[in-house]
Image 1 (cartoon, rainbow, N blue to C red):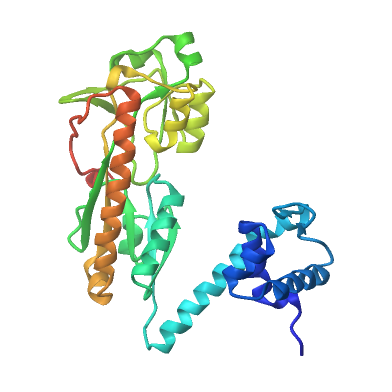
Image 2: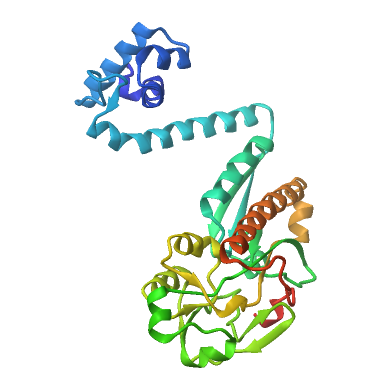
Length: 331
């Protein structure tokens, strides 16, 4: 049974290289095939598909409307081929593949987390890491995930807690809201304002604000309990003052002026991010500890760079006083 061009992975690799280089000769060289054969392969692929994927009258080649619709799935196909090759090479070498479930219970940039997983796959191919959203400490303890990235320091005897970084929150509101109701300067001023806060597992409700060594309780006129993305939209639309949004979510809005810092540097207690894993899991998978150490260091560098830029953008003094350290008891 003959293989059609659309069933030939080389044809799809050529498609990908042509997207990158825009001409046959260079794309063929990248795949180490003859330019004439590459041209015929592209023609055969388009014939099998029943439509052109490139406009070859232009230099460099330009994807057609149909070709643009294929590009994402082609990348997925070729990524699957690479993963399959890595897997059977490990099987040939007699290596065991360990699949680790990593729970993410923070608001860290998911694209950055995914890039770290891809990077570590090159360091230790025997570990396959699967990211699972919104699973934390309790899920580590009941075995739903092997380890988790959480927004506090856990104090459990059976669990190893590796501190990663401290994350700062900026209280923000829209210019329209502040023009309408005035800009609060102290926590007491919130008695005349609406606050947008979160009340999720792992995120205790904000009952007071800190500034250096000083703490003041808050009694807002009204509180809306929302998840982060709804709170962000509500703040931009002038519905209230957001107290709990991480800088990773507010940075763009602060830069374009749709949100502005308020409360003169008063802020909710910082989040103390950490990685947690049961000791028995570490004993079972000997190379998991190496991953935790590497992952924690990379996360620490990333988070620290991000919140330092937040201080600069919001004109805050750095560093600030970081109270507490553990909120596990409040959960």
